[in-house]
Length: 420
Ligand SMILES: [Zn+2]
Image (cartoon, rainbow, N blue to C red):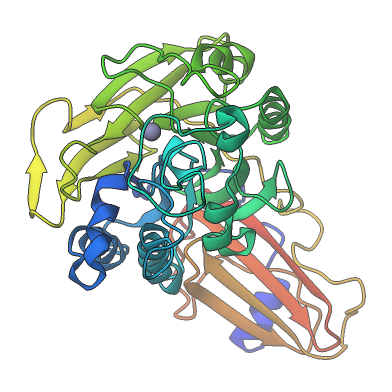
């Protein structure tokens, strides 16, 4: 009996149960970039935004950056008659194209400046530098006009997006990913959302009770770390969002926002006694390419926050910008289904014993293959060893099994102990 045959019959006693793995990872926060984007007025001379984007991609692996959250005010306002048209959106899009090419996931909260509510267009349709907190016309209706944002960032661009409140707009959307042995749900929202959107957030969060939720919105905390007021031309103010949604779900972990200078944080307490970590990141008054990294360590229950400008090559080292949150209880991932011992772990109903070839591949959550087996026999499982017959490290893994007839089965599993 060769080793592969042994593997195929060796399977049912393996120890499998959910367990978080000790992989630190980083959530990257882009603060309001409206000031950096005005550099695009001299388009070829842009320095700050490209420096931010290039740094993120260059540090993707070393910092294990798993998701990027932009807190809104991507641009300062629309300039439809500029060259190129809407030069700030074009610059923002070009930057995110680099991130797209790197295969990284992100979301963008809608800032007031990312809508028609804030200046940029004269009454006759020509461009102007007529910004303000609210432009002329029906400012409430204009706040929900995100046509330009959605033109540059259509739904298909968000590769981790799993659902939207409105099918053709990404103003309110949710995204999922797995990192650090945990499942994560990121919601990006419109500014001071409508009640219907809030109802949808509630339904999405309720449907994902074992995901750690990150709520990304533009207007939430004040500069002093209290609940901010509504912007005056939206719908639900931050307090109403908290009372009507965020405090009600014990799996809401992080609230990220921008809009007002400069940075603040607060630990809020939900109705279940759970802690919610709220952070404001916005250095628009400087516009020097600052960004925020949040290194999450599920095993130690910590989030390490750093503030860095790739453009200046400087860190902000004061306690408001360089800090560690401790004692965080993350929500464990749901137990994997159908992967405990007993019946054959991997099987395909249409792939009976002795039938055509089947291939079993085992991957880490980051996509690295740790084991592959081809067998003419029915694939029944795996003995937790890699190709060198060494026990693989405990942690979460993904299995994919396929047969020659095109049948395919995949799932996630966790291995709790090192195979001797
Ligand atoms: Zn704003």
